[in-house]
Image (cartoon, rainbow over all chains, first blue to last red; front, side, top):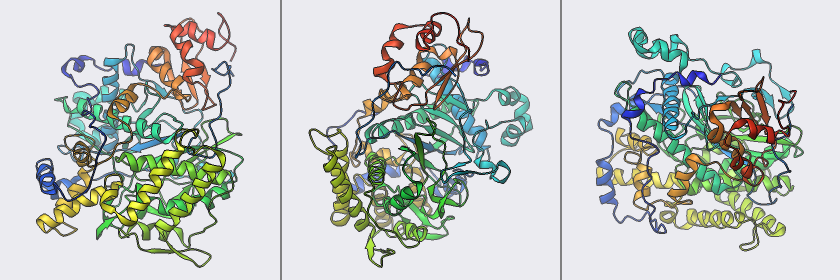
Length: 67
Length: 557
């Protein structure tokens, strides 16, 4: 009964070295603050992370119904 | 029916505080930017499939297991009746395995690709897995969903829910590394901002003796207002986001009823689905559908902790005696008011803010916790004191120091980023870049997800450390039946042919028939009760023989 998944091709396994990703190291006790300090720096970083072509990307994110 | 799996009864949890059996369900938004018209069910199945491949690397013998639908009762209504199947919306029939047929595959990638590889895949794509940590990973409608294992406290709820995000991440990585498949992004959010919403649900075990009307009365004002600390924030107003602006909750605009059975249409503030997944005459499983999916650990922690606390108030008959006038409208009023100054009308004529209502609940909860002793900092249950403290801290900050609250309250953290962009670049609320920030906040990849960029800069507080979350990807909680389920998968996966919340089914060589081990008591099957048994056996046969109390012969079922 458990056979269905056993029939999946195994060849891809060897190509992938990703397992459960390592989480980033835990910082010391978070001194989190949303103060305006570093906001420019933060925005600069996030500029570099944001997907390109915002309008098209957001438009294409269409979901089917869920609960 | 076979014997119960444990040799002794599990102990009850301390009453009056935040401890109770609970769990989280997260439906992820799914998107393949390079294949935008791809079939969502197909892609979701590929996510499950990808994780099956990941776990095969880690668990010899395979960790995939079919779901046992025997005890699913999605049409049982907690108010005391059952909906006729013919009258139910098709999406309510969650007790039937979903079918991914060749037609769906063809729709997804075209006939040609079906010829190439779909034929085989369509017959074998995995739609359900039970994981070694006791969770379920499966395809729910058109989304991959991770249902956490049962835990006993809000800290563990955060841990095993966040572990689900790592499960999803592992699947995303796996698909990204496959040159034959389009990369898939997963988002821990609740709407596409084009009129569709998908849920993140909470489940809480309650004694069946508590009248459902008490639950509705006690919870509704709380659910209308708890979003001020556990809303995830949303750009756009209205189900289709046709009006511009920012609101507190992802989900609020999608709720249209006060009480009801549905979860996909006419969504109710109080959901009445009554599938206890446990001994039905003792327990009900309160199925909460109104929450936002949270990445913020503090928001998630408070969502579970305060709700569990309010259920304790209801069980004790001590919930605040308040009733909100037109709660669906009030829910949206609160969500649309980021100033937190809007007032809600109570049936007794008073007008109060969301903060006022939350303080009423906090006051009642603190008193109950003190009277029962569970809230004591030293001699309490180890959880309630912390929840009450953090709840009070966040309410105080929301009133007087919102910059501080933004390190824990998810909608405020996201708002601080949106405000930064608005100020720096002079953006209007309907600018597409802000829409992208709202969406990408919830990307589960640490390098792309903006929440994770905040976390890396210590702009968000943590409740649990990363090592605990990583550990929870593979390890079940020790103190619920999820331990038994998870260990059965990780120890005897090759002989487990099915599992559900309240059963594990073995197909052991030498036994003439399947062995279904019921796990109807959520606080049994714990590490204390069954840990030694798992250590004693390497093979399922002798393990089952001792568990089921017979030495050699299979039991007569």
